Image (tube, rainbow, N blue to C red):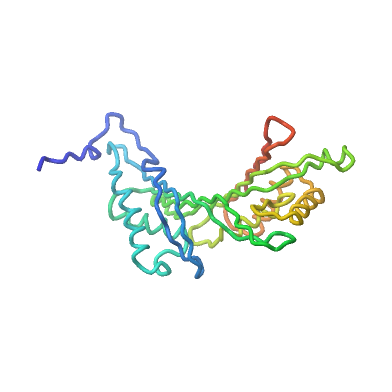
Length: 270
């Protein structure tokens, strides 16, 4: 068998430290038992570590192994004893990576979809709603920190109060897309469902996958009774988030304007 050269261990020509090197867009399966309820996800992973200036590169396969071995363990064993949340899963991967590859800083991110059943406003049918969620865990040994980042993206509606005030109660309506991000200590428990509820309740009206005629009428009426600028939506989200969650909060709302060729944006943080 020919000799294997560990070129990653060589000294690079340019000695500069790199803060994040790793793999991205790795898709696999994950099972989570959140408070007794089993969730199955098909997430996309990104995992990175720092590289010191005296190392040419990292051993990429060890990052992949840390993910696949942790996933296999979760499938083979009783899920309720292994991972109780996406961030717990990420921490398990980081701990496995610690045994495989030296590093001072590690990040792991999961992007996936969370499906929640909602009741329609009048017919009381169940509508399955899909939300984009991202969860990140950041371990920094130098700073002695273990933090997590939770991010949800929610689609709702806005009705323009300016046009309504100047057009005998008529106005234009449009979809709005809002993202709420919270960076906090790893041990702080913040359900993604609670973050989604904060965002969704801040629009002129939520949107639904399923709407019967009576539900559609109710949604339209609610929008006209609750007109909001994109600024209003951003303010309401951060106001509610500050009351309910601990950590650094970031809010971004984009209104997909129906009467313009451009969109509008409102963004704030705390």
